[in-house]
Image (cartoon, rainbow, N blue to C red; front, side, top):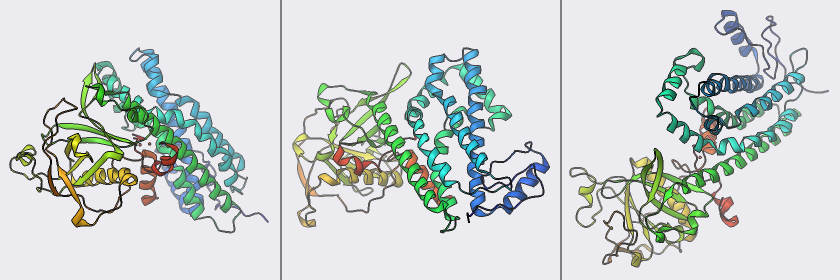
Length: 463
């Protein structure tokens, strides 16, 4: 005899408490709608409530996708606030995803029996979830789309239009990007919703095994989307690099498929740098603006991962040419600092960097240490750990400045436990899934031999 996800029948027929949660909405704000919905949800089993949340979320997503087109895209095109090419770049193929989610709702509706029960939801999900691969292109384009939207916001007409929308009731006080980011936010919720349904499904229910398969499918889909998004984000930043010297160019930069970590740091002079840790090379840059567009001017010589040495420095414990402490402030000791350098002292390159706070410093240290770990020799005994001291170079634009006289000192390298959660490191999809599981977060390959190792340690900035 088949087993069903049983739903308690309510005396208020317009608000159906079907297991799939495929409900008819009462007018927003109506007392009957609010009261009836609360009574219905209270009467549902935990499994039914999770399925209801999935179905209601699909309805909300469809409405928001239609709203993005009707309230933002079409008016801006009609009023010539943006060109059709610009709008296509920002909105992508948003319309094409509406039928995708409508199909899921229709399948759930067809599976709902007259008495408001559904025998199995697993087979529906196993068949439908692979279609989410369609989001690869949309998610991969998000970083570039956000950059273009931010650029267009400098236009007064765009500013005024978006502000009027924000002040209108239909926006729910959400800006345009919030609507454009809704599909990505929805994607990372599927594993959580499925796990919640599975958690409340009896072990002997026929859906149990199929739901486990569905969870595996969605995790694979998100992994593929994340990989593609990471590659796209990596290429986006590579295309924005500017070189001051031909010697700075390295094939390992152009060949990068993974951006492990990136963000703003300060050098010893207090100047802001934007640092990129690609899969095979560390690149320090200075942010510049070219024709109202962001670019990154490569600062010094990029350091290949296999030649990179990391030193975790203690607060206030660093001396560099007698003026290092003063560079970060005359009264305060230098805090949240670490050093990166070439292993070969003859290269003469050493960069002492400062993070905004201890949390971000530790994230950078963890990310760099994880990246260089495969290339590190076996740990030597503490008394044998000696590193040459390099004077930090002061020429701002010379990537091949002469090296200073090396002096010996005890290494500042310390052994610390790795933390996999790195700010602006690893994927946005992964991060959001991890965050979501705490309540109830998913940024970005590498050569084949290292691709699997790095796949769980990418940013963006699904970005």
